[in-house]
Image (cartoon, rainbow, N blue to C red; front, side, top):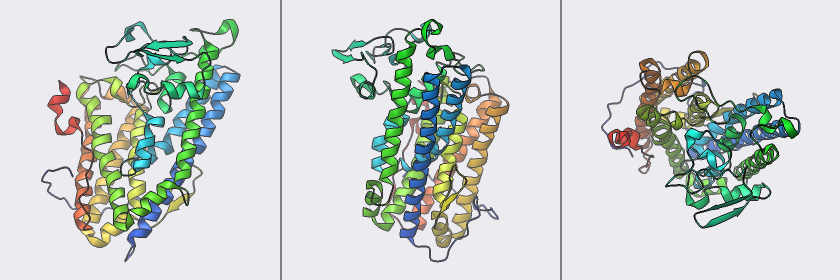
Length: 424
């Protein structure tokens, strides 16, 4: 648990975010089951939207055009919505955390995959595959390792993932696909996202930047792997799946601890710290999660929505239907009505702060501009989100005591706990 004294503030008269009433005598086991049901639906939606993305990418590669590239980009952004709402399941569920790197690892050294600007450089002391460019090279030799990429297949991409034991060698997942759709964002903290031309997938003499056929093979293979990996995870949350079995084996109290571990760790160490405060401290656009597409504001917003879904026991599917059940919110309110109101208020404030960042990104400036130096208004909008996430985490800690649970360890972050070390 994050060890700091915290003065609890009671949020009176707060309207529950989803309007779900506290149910007298809410059963903990039923709350855990609802949590698993929401996981099944969320990962199921992540899979279905990834399949739509796959179809759009297959059309782009078969019939390259500006319109088909735009459609693939739109499908990628749509696919991020349910996936980001699933991230609250990562912490506390080992089966998700062990798998997550296949689909959402970042940041990545994009020179492993494709051509990059001269400013990127040609070598790195930490990464022998830093500028390997598998799309342009059929044989990769670095650090005593040789990878045969004569044909770019799913098997080759799996070998490239973390090649040489380097975490930034991200060859698969959403962000590898994002890079192949948008290209590098060379604008720093200025306006603009990546601007890869559709002709990077063109046929014959219309091909730009070379190797368009291999680039298309890479993109389709990476997307096939994404669908395969999401399909596997969706199955784990179905009745009889290993994720449900592992959750059930923890018992009712253990399941509640798992829910809180996910809420507190995503809220504090991961989202407030590593994904948000770190970039704000460094004013570094490379520290924004969806850095090629400038979609970070949506990803952060949907992480918060995912936390609300789990706490309130209600998820709205991409088709508009709802999956809901007995909630942690109800349990907390029954145990301590004032704390229940407090948590509702903190979640509402954080969702509003994330919504404000999202609205600013859509109307004023993108996320990478907001974290830039000499931008007090943009910095303040991001800091308000960090403050909301940190504040709600303190209330999550109070739930542990209110429900008389075993101590829970939330993920920490140097960006929040020791920012002077990060700044160096």
